[in-house]
Amino acid sequence: MKKLVLTDVRKIEIVECPVPEPGPGQAVVRIRYAGICGSDLHVFDGLNANAKMPLVMGHEACGELYSMNDERTDIKVGDKVCAHTIKPCNSCEPCAVGRENLCRQVKIMGTNFDGVFTQYMLVDANRLIKFSDDVDMRLAALVEPLTVGVHDVRRSGLRAGDDVFIAGAGPIGLIIGMMCRLSGAAHVVMGEMNPVRIQMAQSLGFTVANTTDPAAFKAVCDEATDGEGFDKSFEITSVQPGFDMCLAALKKSGVMIQVGMPPKGTVMGVDIDKIIYSECELRGVRHHTMSSMQAAAKIINSGRMNDQLEKLISAVYPMDRYEEALEKARTDKTMLRVLMDFS
Ligand SMILES: [Zn+2]
Ligand SMILES: [Zn+2]
Image (cartoon, protein in one colour):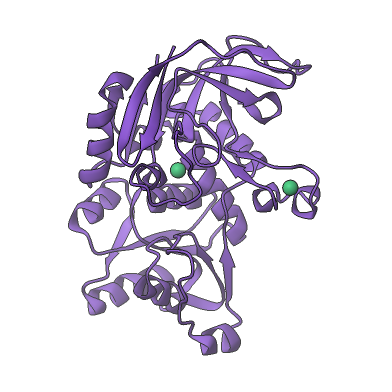
């Protein structure tokens, strides 16, 4: 088998090695497709201090169960599967209350331990999630970014009929928007300034408010909300103007979700009057839980998002052409998800 190993900053080697043997409680997944996420490029560029090289990057993938050394009977060899991307300790207080994403000892796939850019991957059997036999594996490879959408929309407490504003129409903004629509949002408005992304969002059926034109921006938001403001807003840009826009966009008692991750230590200014006088809430999101990934897998199994998911796959490269794939993902802003084929 072959795996892609990050040996130094921006240096990947294809390494030949034996297929791993699962120890007790472990399983081996034969990876089929894996997506390249912005956070992988961050690790690749040496910008994530938690990532220790040599490292197999990647956390967005699907594959088939190849072997398992565990009591689980609900999954068998050959099944299409994915693995949840964090390893919780299962004993701290956040774990005990079901918020494993906040685990005090949390370890993250592709950062703290080897990820999915490999042909065969060793995983904990209890983190495996099964897909239906008939799912399209390319679409199933989007399960992790879709899980981000599920988790973030659940955190927002979105209800049917809510109006939603999303600052930043990149891949995650679009996925959150799709998940809001699926969850019954009345209106979803994307705030975006980049012409390529504006066009992309519109082609996916979203209303876009161009943030470079204040009067037009206000007109679009007012039309969607009858001038009342939005029930929920999602901030993906990680910068102060996006933050201000998301808070200002809320109606009374609205909820804002901070999705984007500015560099650690960043301090944002907050319009405290808005929080006080409008009883608005600001909520953070951190990774996601296995239950959110189980939900995302069910949505993929249902097939009801297939048309939209299909549009998120911008290119597929064989694993041997990883350099081109990473370069494409980094430089071409029309790429929503670049997949690598590890079969
Ligand atoms: Zn990701
Ligand atoms: Zn824990």
